[in-house]
Length: 334
Image 1 (cartoon, one colour):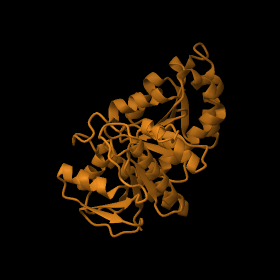
Image 2: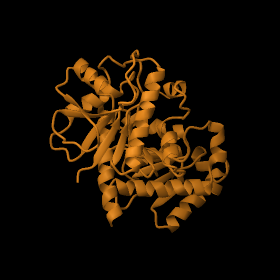
Image 3: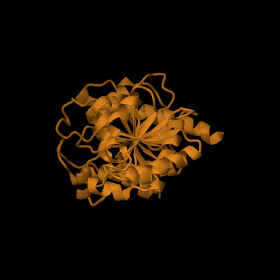
Image 4: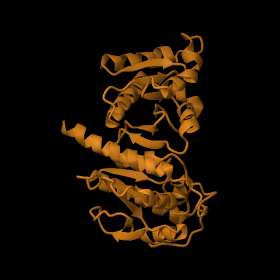
């Protein structure tokens, strides 16, 4: 059976509806999955018309529908009536709307009505304005699925990166690391790569300090935390190695020596992947009981409504969701 994929529309005042519409216009007629949008039929129709796309926006009432070329199915959040908003600006209604779309997608995932969810960008400020105090999709998804062991991961054809820590101040990174946390990150990375179809994953682990600590000269975290975590993973027959100096390991991974790099903090991992795959990298929440992929960009309020948004991120996010859903089904049946 073809994977069923829900795409949340994102903040209506941002580029989410635009990149979704452009992606549907580019979908191959022979696709072997069923994507649909959770959001507003009215907003998607307005977007398609403004872009001049040959798409038929159809309203559906459940995730089971007849998939056909040229159709853009939308599961309406009917209980939320559309209000007036200005493109490119933070709006309370838009914040609540995008939040409720995510809630709906998670509920469908937890009840096995969909195989994966793809999220268009939301505005954290709009969420907060609407009273939803989360740091973004990942924190909300973790709470809704009651998941504690999850990692922010970025995938592309050139480089894959998983983060041990994410949105915390730099001065808190060191005390947030532990042997257990780094070890669990490596284990999640191994499972993630298998769900991408890589049967024998090769994982490189970044050091925290310059030159991976230089045997303790520049800090002890690499010796006392990261190295033992790598050894625990190796004892489990996971092909992990490190800690490596962060200034060279990403280049080695890009050249094909490793399938994924575990970075210890946000910018350590995000800078290299955004340098080489800004338009195509996909944000994936690894460890959740449901598959969630996302575009690796924000609402782009500065260009919202101008038909200038690049939709390659969205296309990649849908492709990864399909790939992971297909392989997870296979792995679970073995």
